[in-house]
Image (cartoon, rainbow, N blue to C red):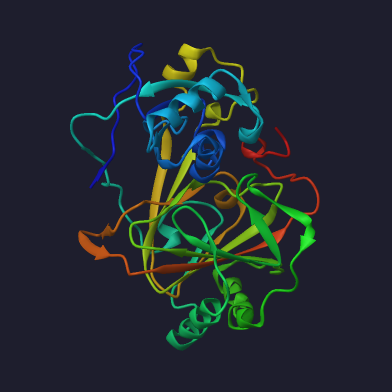
Length: 341
């Protein structure tokens, strides 16, 4: 399966509509949605792509060359408050002549226990087909908020994509009644060995069209408590997990020179795991799985699971349930924690 590929900058000043941006990406805590929102201030963005597997360098591709020029002049080598104060190192980049195949050889597990990620749980057929139908009907009668590539709804508190956080002073009300079938079954996780009491007050509903995934990220530590639940409806997908070495989580955005930021090999290694999420299954991220592993959904229209090609449905809807954190995070993973950096 191919993705857009771009030539690595080689000191050329040749302008283009594509920017190579170093010191920026999921491995330093910046999601594609956040990056696109910042660079979108200079013109419509065609896409944001990983420049390599380090997770610290991305390609921002514009529809127009003048947008790229404006962004480069404004953001290059300057601290960007919207990106956590990071100093970006930006050059022009151009398309390679050919498409480069992406290595999708990572094994895909059907059970969370096979991944060896502490705190990860998966229950198949968590709800019935009839309950799934009722949940989809309920959200389809509610207005959707449009993002660049998908639609969302928020309940309890609104998740703010520009800051990856919530405003706890803007309470939207109690969780909707249509969640009752889900909340009543949370005790099933106790049978898997998870005994903590489940108290939730925030819901985000995402609708993904075919081929649209989710950028790699760790849910902001200071925004949410330990438990994060994700219920899959209507269509299946693969969710991948990555644990980057702690060296890529820089305590200061200015600790690397331009050359080091673009060529550092400190972030070239990470662990990868993948799991198949069928419709009506629910995933729980807790502990290490929640605090230290990036999770994301590859942008595929067809997933390969145990040599079987599974085409994604016309839509996939996920219910992400969380509890708002009212104070700083004091987790055991300070190297990944925005409260403890």
